[in-house]
Image (cartoon, rainbow, N blue to C red):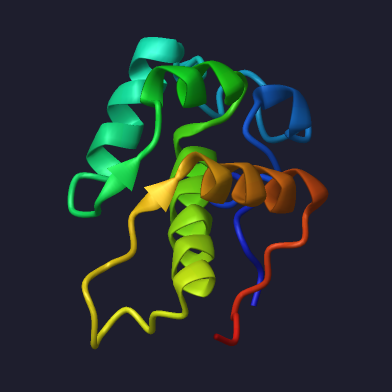
Length: 123
């Protein structure tokens, strides 16, 4: 089964696409969506963390994550929440959620930057 290369681009920018995919006549418009600024990153953190206790300076975290896409920020929040659960030994079901701290985000940032995030973790 052949896939349409435009349906699943290999990157987040037009520079990563094969020129044949973006030649004139294939697409009517190219829309560039810039990465979120610090205020937008803070809003994304607030939305992603609204149901979890947090002890984090979101302004500082927003400054530390310049260049992150919204998907990167969501992955960071998920990884920090897993770090908080691992730190407290919680399984996420029996007890209230552990508060996510700045240290949990630092651990998550290190994992994401190093590419060591795995699909599953054992607690």
